[in-house]
Image (cartoon, rainbow, N blue to C red):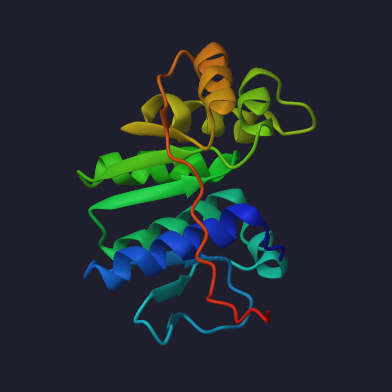
Length: 173
């Protein structure tokens, strides 16, 4: 499991939304945290699938586990961040259940992945492209990403710049 800038930014937004009274739930990879966990701030984390066990049931089983976690989350809005099969899987389930979904670019590579599948299996690339097209809204971190996703997919994106919560520091002098 890796944690990068996109994950940190999502947690920052979760803290802001939670502080404003919104219920926030993450659906995450199962790394042994248990089926359901809560942060001190009340942010809920539901485990979906684990890397080691995911391939045992195949790709369809992995999608099923995500959809089951979405059913349990029972959210009005689902947000996916970064390119891959999950964008399409979430879009399909959200729309089947009358919910909304948003695709939010995590890097400049996301628009490039829309155009060229590279090493991805065809079904993964197809699901990603379907998810971008089917999302109710597309967000980008920068004007560069907004223009790139529009050029790649024809989707208009709104820019949602990164937020960072910087704790107060004591300065000498």
